[in-house]
Length: 179
View (cartoon, rainbow, N blue to C red):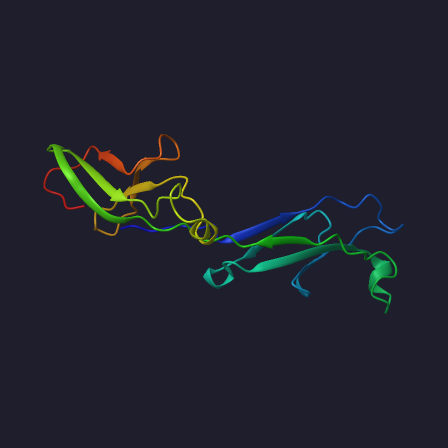
């Protein structure tokens, strides 16, 4: 099973404002692309996690945060009391790297070890500049072993922890099992 697992959340964090507007803070309001997405009534909360999906890839999102207190809650004016928005934080949601292809066994080393190989998603050193802009480089591959019996796949090799390669030896296979 080959899959690319992109990060599916954006986490933003902020510091407590230098001043509270002479009244205790009641919480924060978070805005994404001009729409309020969260209003927290907990002034100790300083992070917000936003879910992103495949449809967000390549999209630019703009976030702003504001602290509020009773002065803001009792006012009909949007920026009176204590409710000044932060500077905008603009994030472009990244693209998934190209998935590897042609996963195959290259040789049997022993009863419990095989060598596997795959083609990278693209040769980023030789691709056209346009291709590099559209598809980000691959920094690591993770090889998982799936026993086909519904168990969680086991991580058997992480090229991010060693060398970026497209050839891996899978060890400790059980004789008589299909993977």
